[in-house]
Image (tube, rainbow, N blue to C red; front, side, top):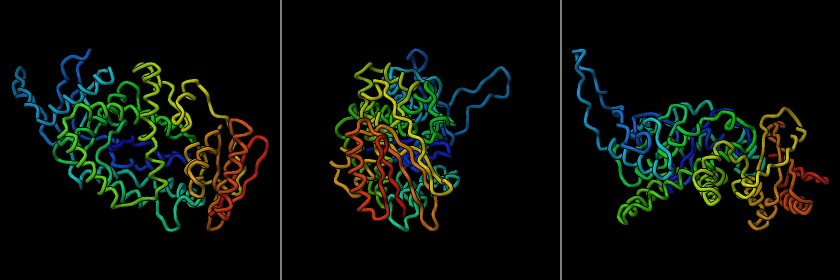
Length: 422
């Protein structure tokens, strides 16, 4: 399975910045990865009104078309390369699937392994501090083991796991490899979908990716859900032999990514947009076809709850605003935990049914983290939809706290508050 995520601005502070402030902070992906950043050469898109493709610009590795010395004479354009022709064909497929036209060509670049990894990780060091803070939160919640260096784990993992990425800041698309094959073409369709969405709806939104709540996760789920839906439609057009070839390449790439393991919680968090996003988009399509999907970019989903239960989003229901609980020291990290993170955290010590039932009535939350000597403490406050939901969550967190060994739970008529240190 190929998945993708957009390169996110720095400064994301919510815990589910793990799908963003870690996964996206480090331009991350999950499973077998296809990222987003940008650099390269131009892909051709269909012309206005869905007509002939806009001619692709020359690849970065090729000399551009030049003007001949006489001012009245222009050199003939260079013949389109095989890559340019294929990008034009795949762009036409994406435009047809989304019922939108490309407004301009998309820069596309093929890089060998060494150049690709260098490009991918070029600015990643600036995210180390944010990642280190999130590492402390995860350790306090016993979601990663002592001694794990989250930042270094990501560097190793994504250096092997990422196949391609699209960058909404520069409008460029980069792929790992020196030639096209069925798997790379599937990836290219996915990334071209991001480029098309970016041209129409603007995917570079610092107000979302720098927020201290789950908006980045919700928006990423919409983006990836759309791209995976188009990707799935493209895979359906492949011959049996082409699908088998793509699957073989995907399996080989997955084994390569697995050679640099990362904590399971990070995989679960970062995969969320790719696993849940398509189901969310399917609900939008059922509600109002492509127009309803397009409208979601103006009012994106803001919580993992809305992605898990699209009906909540479609009805316009919003989470309860929960003020940050009091911290026991200088705050190093804060934001929203979210329904999906609650479920995953409870599963660390509880069975999946108990964890899922307890998190299902999530109504809103906030958390703060602070350092206490050599350890970090996290305090989380949760509101629920009903008093019964509040009681279920209280019971689940108390079970979790007993297994944790350094955690407490306090419950009022309105909130369940959990404090854990480690």
